[in-house]
Amino acid sequence: MEKRLNDDWITEKHIDFEYKKYVLLAWLQHVNERFEEVKLYPALADLVRHYRNLVALREQKHQLYDSFPGKLLQADIRQFKLVYDKLSTDDQLMQQLEQIISFSIPHFEQQLAEGRKIYDFIESKLSILPVGIVPLHTDAGYLFLRNGDERDTRVFEYQITIYDQPEERYRAIGLRYITSYSGNLKYTDEQIKLDLLRCKTDLPNPATYAVRCELTLPVEETLLPLAKRSLVKYLAAS
Image (cartoon, rainbow, N blue to C red; front, side, top):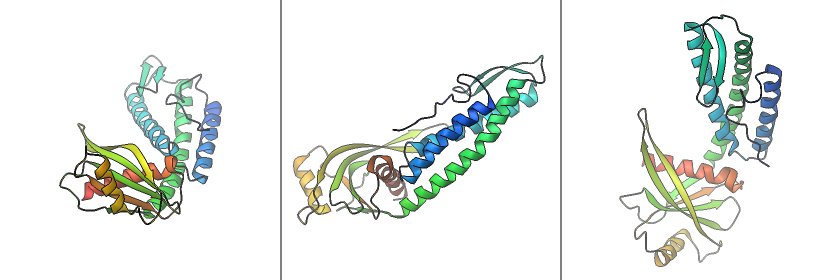
């Protein structure tokens, strides 16, 4: 069963260093167990999000505390906002928050490094090859996924969406599972593509890519998320 750490874990219930340390270490132990099972997601994504939230909270806390040293009245982890009473310069709640953040960040960094090591190793075992002629537009098409020693080929329809943000432009990929083909000589990648062209007419000239992994991995928790990210990177570099 997947255990999740709430986004407002620092401020929910009560702010106490010993209690928060217990909450965090219990969750990180669960994350480590998932990594030992080679199940990277959603744990790795949660790690990244919580770490960024902590760093943002620490930076804002230091900026506000240096400029307006005072009593912390409210800590809103969802909005990354701290509200102060300027009349006081020493506050026990602030000290607890500082202690929690200082303890948590190195533990997140350590677990992130372990997750990144596993991610990079698995990524090195993935290969991506185009199937047939690559069309001019590759923002939509098919992804063929084969998992290690398994003989079946999972077929997904993919769609790339480009988002423009004030600070960056990034690509997101959506996948829709279509079907699976049993692994025999009849169903090579080229034959699978031809069969799809006969059955589906909404993509008359689809970009098609085969993703192979040398390792046999948990599909939903590891292989599929890495295949998606690898395909986005591959298309961006093409």
